[in-house]
Length: 267
Image (cartoon, rainbow, N blue to C red):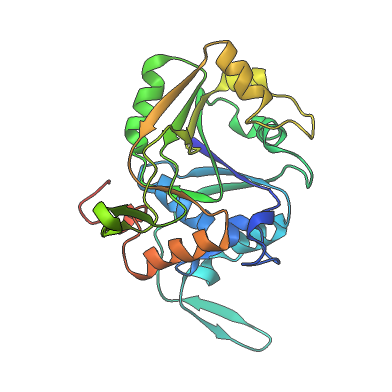
C-alpha cells in the first residue's frame, strides 16, 4: 500500500527546538523524524510514499533531492569536470517518494483530499502524521482493516505520561517511580490509519477542513470507522520535552520503533 504522510503543519508547539525547519524534519538520532516514520513503514513492506507538504516544504524537497549526499559517504572531485563518487550504500533504493505541495494554509482534511490523484487505482492506503513514532504491528493493522470492510481504521493508543508517576505507601514512603509512564485510561488516536478509497467521499477541498473533525465525525455517524488497539510504544513529538525524550531513546539504543535494526525481523 502507499503511505500518505501529513507534513505540512505549523509545528508551533515545538518552535523552541527549531524554527527554521518543518516539524517532520526535526532530527532524531541524526535523521529527521519523517525519515524514521518512512523507515518503519518500509520495514513492513510499504515503500511508496506521498508526502503532503505545506509550511517550509522546500526543506523536505531538498532533503530528498539530495538524499544520496545526506545518507552516503562520497568524494567530490573539484574543478571544471566536477564529479561525485559515492562509497557507502543505503537501504532505501526501492523507495518511491511523491512530494506534493498541498498549500501553506490548508488543514489536514484538505491536504489528504489534494493528493487523491496520486492514489489512483489504490483500493486502500496508509495514512499518518509526520511527527509521531511507535511500534505498531503494521501487518496486523492492515489485516484487521481488510477484515472489517469499513472505510477507515484508526490506531487507538494509550496516551503517554508527561510526568514521572510516583507510587507511595503508608506515611508517604515512595515505593515506585516510573519516568513517563503510559496512562492506563482511555485511548486516543495515534494516527497510523488505514483507509479505503471511499474516504475521499467524506473530504473536500476547503482550506479549513480538519480531517479530525467533520470527516471523522461523519465516518462515525455512518458506522464506517473501526479502532485497532495498540498497547505498545507510541510517542508524538509535540514539545521540546518529547524531542529530548525521543532523542534520549535513540542515543541509548532503546528506540522501540527502529525495528529495521533488528536482524530477527519484524517487531
